Image (cartoon, rainbow, N blue to C red; front, top):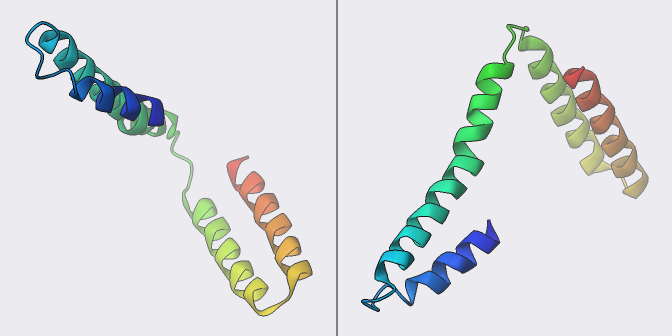
Length: 97
């Protein structure tokens, strides 16, 4: 994404040049549309196709467990934060399975 942004900024400088204007316009809009597809559309299509009708209550329960353990870890020291992070990962892996 940063590479595309740098290329679009670089191409923006040659938009005013009459010889390279067509190249610059196609480069800027091509990179912008491909970045938007990669960041927004492709993940949305993946989620839409991946939805196999499983109950989302299990995922919601995992999110609630993570939130509750986060609240508990804020009151403790570093060891409780590490333990809470380990619990978060375990919960997320179980929710994904």
